[in-house]
Image (tube, rainbow, N blue to C red; front, side, top):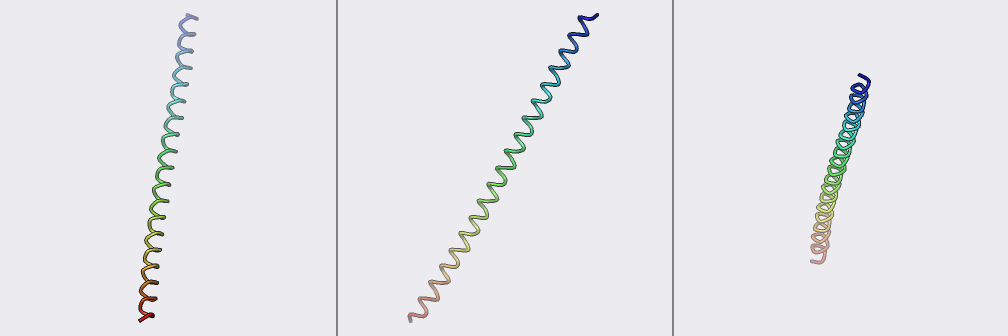
Length: 69
């Protein structure tokens, strides 16, 4: 009977280790997803800033060209 109990205890420990590993993997995946989302948001913000800069440049060009005439 001791032998059976020993085996189940070992199995139980293995299962716990596997569960912990799975949880760690899930956490890592979630972190990666969050990082990707942050990067995408930053890229979008950069794109928006670029667009605004382009618009400003166009406005400046228009005003300088009209003052020349």
